[in-house]
Length: 435
Ligand SMILES: NC(=O)c1ccc[n+]([C@@H]2O[C@H](COP(=O)([O-])OP(=O)(O)OC[C@H]3O[C@@H](n4cnc5c(N)ncnc54)[C@H](O)[C@@H]3O)[C@@H](O)[C@H]2O)c1
Picture 1 (cartoon, helix red, strand yellow):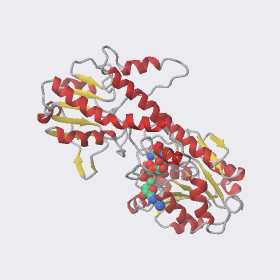
Picture 2 (tube, rainbow, N blue to C red):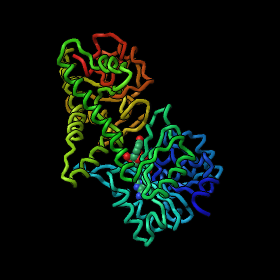
Picture 3 (cartoon, rainbow, N blue to C red):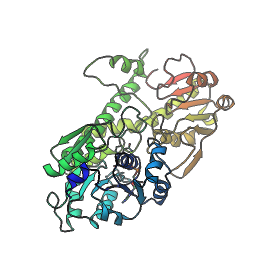
């Protein structure tokens, strides 16, 4: 039976390589749509969790996952041999950077090598990991073609970037349009058909490279715009009577040609702080310097340092020397209402602040503990007594569950990097983005 027919009658067997923030939700969506799905992950703990019907990603419906596993629709393994029975493979492995901020595509390479061992005629392989343009055609394709099978003739190859926004209740996997670029029109059409079973709107582009570049444009657009507001926020701090938060909200009332971005303590997560560097690296191959990317990175990476200076200055204005101060950090996830701490600016701020103050603790209802760069910390239990015992409360992530009015009442000083205290007037509040 042709793959097209298998997709249409829900008989295509699907493999998802990498069961993390991107792969697990995708696996659940395909299984929910009625396809038999196997997830392949080298992390035994994730494999065991899935097979036990145990969810570990906040955006995934745990009950649904358990039902799908019990119904035999979803299983996980660490063994690539499971691909022998599969028709369509989606690669969702990490794409971090190296210590010198060059792309680390070793996970894509090793996943492609794993697929190559079991590649069959008629298979569809789609790379979903965010990466530099030409990865699908110059990295994945040659590895798969070493088998003697030709991409576009014997098997199908495409790139389709992932747009999932963890914590976003409005736009989920199925309601967020997805972009697809196939190596050939047939590759693109099969990938389109596959994703259309679980995603309402599919946007076709002419090649995998165009799809790779689309994803980077989206993320660089965010990084550059966040840098712009961060720079203006620092300017507002030197001026009298200009509050950057008020300015952004006012500008956002323009019904066209403006989209609001907000200042903050820096970039976080697995995407925005990393992906722009993938393009900057690739551009150098073409003797091209992506100045916007570098400048945005410089501004955004400076923000945690700026926040630390702001805290020290605020403490001093309140008559407390930093070296004698006890600081309580609220929120260490990289953005509100999620549990992901990857590249979290809050953790960078804590690292920078720790040697400068007498005591530092944090609370985050979503992150009970963490170990980063050799430092292990546990979330302290939030109470009025606790808040009163600290000299400064530093809001680094604006989780919705906090009662900010109560926190302001109880704290001696609040340094707010997210405008979490919007609408609360108190001389105790110091915000980035205003004097
Ligand atoms: N997290 C997001 O919000 C998000 C959004 C859009 C795009 N992306 C992109 O999607 C990709 C995956 O990101 P993520 O957040 O899901 O990462 P993740 O770290 O949460 O998950 C990746 C998984 O891949 C597994 N893995 C690594 N190498 C493997 C291999 N060779 N074979 C099998 N499994 C392997 C890891 O054990 C891990 O479970 C990245 O390129 C990222 O940039 C992420």
